[in-house]
Image (cartoon, rainbow, N blue to C red):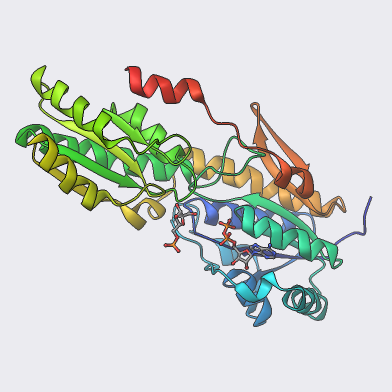
Length: 322
Ligand code: ADP
Ligand code: F6P
């Protein structure tokens, strides 16, 4: 059992994700319910170093559960990757009386949390990223909303692709991870899913498949391309030239990061935020909340960061078959 915390800080870091507000609300209200003070740290680690810190009460988080983005705003902060930055971050916490912090973000943000814990500030991570690319958890805040947003957009593009008998390449987010692309591949019934984990860059195979599909009378050809593969516009030009089928590229971009969170994101983010506050109240530090094998659990951050993310070969092959 570690030391008892009196004042809990909360920050969001890295890319924003729908549901982060639900997690902030839960941290604040759960901590207040347990008699703690709460401070909001604006713009992630950048705001910590700038001492951009506000007092929070129950009203501070009114009417935010249904809103996308993060009311605390977020940032990427290079300075916090340095030992000096981390030391200063811990000093700011001590000066502000913050003895526990909830960090809502991805793997990078967890590395920052790990460093703060090593400098004596109790820290708990909550997985927030639309990419679903955190190894220790089967759920990350924002993925469900993002993948539903992408699915709706792809349905719309499919309507017009069919009407015009076109091939459509739709680029979805995921620089290093293809989970959004894979899920849309299955949810939208795409003809191809190109993801960083699997793509072999054999364009001729795709060209042959487009031609074969056309011959079978298929009226559209949908390719979901993950951001990590990218180059959708030039790919469209090459495919059109090689197949004779009109081809358009659409990059969905940051629309996938915004919007009102789904029910699942609101409920899971609320649960995880509250659990993070509970863990701090129990004196725990250097842990992350996760959803694994159907249960909300927590792991040591060092162990969590060393885990390898599962990738469903079955679902990937299935996307190709059906
Ligand atoms: P995410 O949290 O979504 O993975 P990033 O990788 O951009 O996003 O990380 C968010 C922030 O976390 C970075 O801008 C930086 O401030 C902090 N961070 C990332 N890696 C480290 C590290 N190794 N040590 C300390 N802080 C880090
Ligand atoms: O990590 C979330 C994410 O949206 C990735 O899918 C994407 O590669 C990246 O952030 C984009 O970052 P930025 O907002 O800096 O363009």
